[in-house]
Length: 162
Image (cartoon, rainbow, N blue to C red; front, top):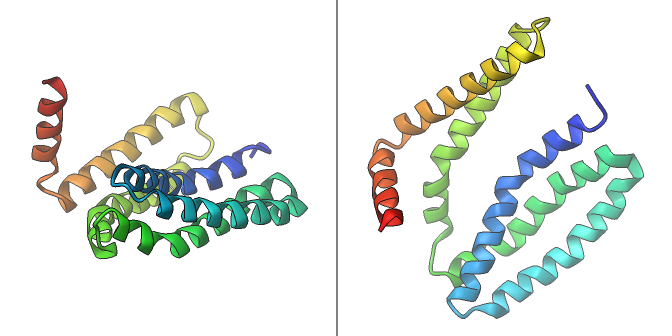
């Protein structure tokens, strides 16, 4: 495994949470609650640099792991205020994200197991097979866990065209 692979894998685990935090900040501004977004930015501005500083003691891997520790901590501190600011309940968000999260966890496990089973196979062959396995499992599970998803997607696509 190359020196950049582990940090990239760790950062990929954090991207969805980072994305969610950004969406909630934008939504808070949109509903006129800039103070909540500012408070959350201040919390992030205090915790993240401190975590990064500590993480650098262990090099690039430590820096990547600091994201894995610090961003969930920031989210725990800021999430309830942010959801209230945009008129949501934490339980509503949980219901909305549970099926993609569950499908993502199963997909990740399936790809890891498949990768181990394909050990020794050429990377040129293995990569497209693993991508296909991951996509099929994720989309299949997502469809199974959220049967109304296809109709929602059709509605979104129709609205985007008009």
